[in-house]
Length: 166
Image (tube, rainbow, N blue to C red):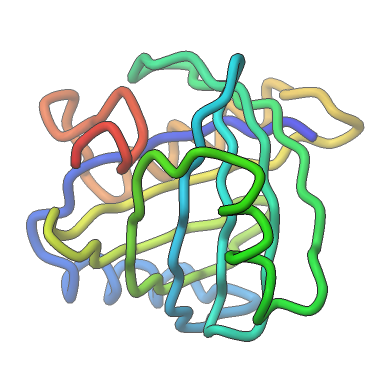
């Protein structure tokens, strides 16, 4: 799978949540997530625990840049979720842990994440999911629209991952 991403500092999480609601998203939810990053030879590998009930192993490749961040990612659900962390800790070397409350809004083919990250602050993240494993001009237009709609300036944008900021 591929998506086009933007991650930025969010000066006012409540204001961004109001803006997200103005888009009339077709789905919204609040998630408590714990991302455990492991050392790898290539890309990034993390175990994502969602509301202590769902476990996903995510391996992804993404350039550390602000513009045109196209990620390639693979997700594998793990069951049972309760034992996934202990199992992976036996196999891999743990690198970092990121805990956050994530407000998720689905708008068109975009996932809008408004995150409150423990120890780091508030952030906005857009993931525009490409169709047929490809990022189209329409996807790029949606990316630019959301960037403008949320008034994200270049100095707010972040190149890497939350794990890089810790």
